Image (cartoon, rainbow, N blue to C red):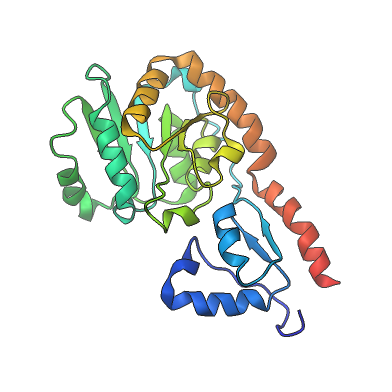
Length: 261
């Protein structure tokens, strides 16, 4: 559109819902040739300012971990990998109840990522009384490649997104990308764009945000190695076809070429 000079503008996650940013973001979006959104939810918000919105999912450039063992050979390690668990209080509450409802005989290591050493005590206090049969392991923030490599030991990765937390609804596939690259079996919330990629019982578990249901699914996956492996094998095929940076670039190409005309 002639009212704006050539170039691109980028914003992160759900910045558009920030009242102090909405007007500015809307003004920029309205003067753009088009908008690329990472999910249906964000696309709907941006259409209020510009009807030319295209959904292109975030992809990853890491496709695998060379040292990863087959998922079926991994220990009973369950992981939740947010960038900052304190920033997702609704999801954290879901994880707390889920872990408390795991089978008492599970003997699970539960990893929470994104916890700096300075906040270990804060995080441990949040789990007091919930971990009698689960060993909590706190993982620090780390470079992306190191983070993905650390997941190569994990059997099941949790990708909760709760409707009650508006900021979370602005997410795309987030840490699910790292799980997929590391051949981790994914348990995801049945919302945002997850059901457009995950198919329940085929390439992952796609569940309503009910802690007991999540606990049962985790117990089952941790106990059934071959079932996990089958999910991972199908998920890898779908991941390479749909959630890599190469795929994102292909989808962006047409829009960018048309914007030059």
